[in-house]
Image (tube, rainbow, N blue to C red):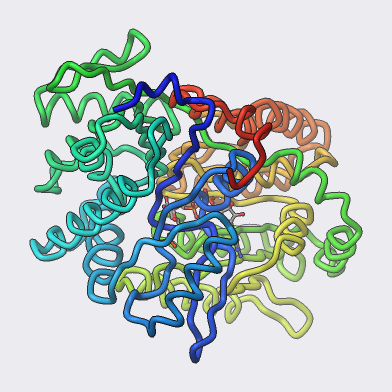
Amino acid sequence: PLDARRVAPASRVLIVSNRLPSTVRVDEGRVQLTPSAGGLATGLRGVHDAAGSTWIGWSGAPAELPSATRREIALRLAEVDALGVPIHGPEIAGFYQRFANGVLWPVLHDRDDHPDPDPDDWATYRAVNARFAAVVAEEARPGDRVWVHDYHLMLVPRLLRARRPDLRTGFFLHTPFPDSMASLPQRRTLLDGILGADVVGFHTPAYAARFGDAVRATLGRDVELASGAGFADDDGRAVSVHACPMSVDAAGFAARATDPRVIRRVQELRAAGGPLFVGVDRLDHTKGIPERLAAFERLLDERPELRGRARLLQLAVPSREDVPAYRELRARVEALVARVNRRFATLAWQPVTYVYGSVDEVELSAMYCAADVMLVTPLRDGMNLVAKEFVASRIDEKGVLVLGEHAGAAAELRAALLVDPRDAGELSRAYARALDMSPAERRVRMRRLRARVDAHDVRRWADECLALLGADLQASERRGPGR
Ligand code: ADP
Ligand code: G6P
């Protein structure tokens, strides 16, 4: 193979993830692309544009489509510098719905109430990972840098190394790394899969340390994390482990806060008067939405003067609707919303406004800018970009962030009101404290939060990660996108 350093100036970055920045839906033969929700897609989108990278992933549609439709999808994806990896209907069920989201996702968020992994689903997970590795091996030119993302593709670094040992590969995990993987029989293979990378990244030092513990305990390899991280793979190759917290386009959210359309919508959202609580989440069992609603109910119980005034606006973005745990969660959340509204609503006032759906970027910014209190209370969360988007949006230095202490963002956003969302009393007391906080304290806290997010935006995250990979984002920008 060619020496990667000699060809580096022409090298590209290949981003590899299950989810692409746009998701394809085929409706009565018509191909529609919508922006993908979720932190991976929103965070990497700007990096992809700046780096002129190629993004390899799943279109979101099953591969069993007429060839003309498949061609159209490939063309539409090529327009956004994306390359689709075909996944068939039964594979979507086994790989994506059951193994990745039914089993791996709960394990990584430290839940052990998941179904036992089915051996056939595990076989499908391996097969789909092998297909991703094959597509990348085929696409990559000597010197390209490969950046693999998230729990769907943990085997890709090792499988790719077998095919293309010349490529420098990074792996970034967007979820937490758990205290224990004991409930997962496949943990050895998965950890070994990640170790096929040259650089492994996590959102926080704690996740990186737990990964080291797991590698030591499960594979018996010694990991030296204290010394700046890393260890030797079986063949003596160095694998380095890093904590790089992902972030948001802080300047973009700040600019959008001054958009006249956003300002108008903020006025409309606030027209009713009274304190406004806001929640924005994918409808996911890690996000603590039922706990958040129950704490709001408790607040109305304990502070009668808030009845008729305080409102909670909760946006739940549809997610993984074919996974049973997500369907059950939706029913539970909607029953809770109905209960709170049934108990307290009057003709003139409804305490909870719940929207199950997607909103555009103007509406999203307006929700952030309208909030008196932003509720980001996941039970566990790799990072949680919503918390950072809220902070970046508040150029008025108003608004209070109530943040779950088990979100990765809590490691950085120390000036938020940090809470344990499992403790209903603590959560509703935090709501009350946010309402009672003096304007001066709100401003001091928001300034500190904003300083952190401004100084550590998504650009800085990408620069750090790509530098570790040996790719230079600035050089890519000089060449321009698509090359
Ligand atoms: P997760 O990745 O678990 O969904 P994050 O909070 O890290 O959680 O990221 C959620 C991302 O989804 C944020 O960048 C947020 O702006 C984005 N998002 C929220 N609502 C929508 C929507 N309606 N359409 C597209 N993206 C959305
Ligand atoms: C989280 C995961 C991402 C995923 C996103 C949306 O952020 O870390 O990998 O893309 O959720 O979920 P989805 O299942 O729609 O890709």
